[in-house]
Image (cartoon, rainbow, N blue to C red):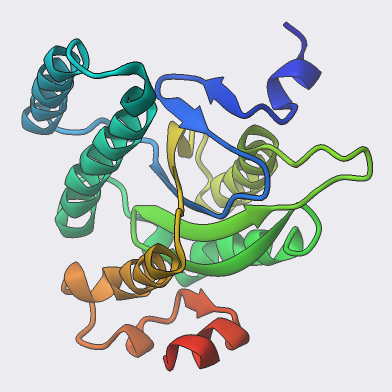
Length: 222
């Protein structure tokens, strides 16, 4: 398979986790720095997968996709809670210069490859809410292409700043289709409130590395 095929838009595409990208969808995407999760976290994730595999055997086909997406969401929140409170591991994104590199990159392709609704740069991970844009040929930009460019450029700049080599971002990312207006608003609030939940600030407005599109702020009264 060529690099072009890998980066082309697909409704379903796979690396380690199954991903679902229907056309015109809005997605909550999360990615983290490259480091190993502790054994107790990985063991819990494996246990959850084993339990889900047993449940999946009795699912009807029409429910299997939705059940799988909900299961991935459950695993994401489990890991994200750990990341927010994690005191170990790299926290390169705490450096204002690195956080700015990430923010500049996200803004750079806004309105080009995707519409950016909001984001939050945490010390060891990033949350974004985006809608991939349609290309001239009628297809949509894929997460694979969007994240390859974003992660690649930010990793190079961060490694130069820190005078380091090696992988900066973890290879995997999480993405979840937002299915309703209420879920959209809940997701925006989850993203901006992440620093508060992690006990980094006592008010989301105090976190310097959060951004929300102005019209979304007005619509939600933020």
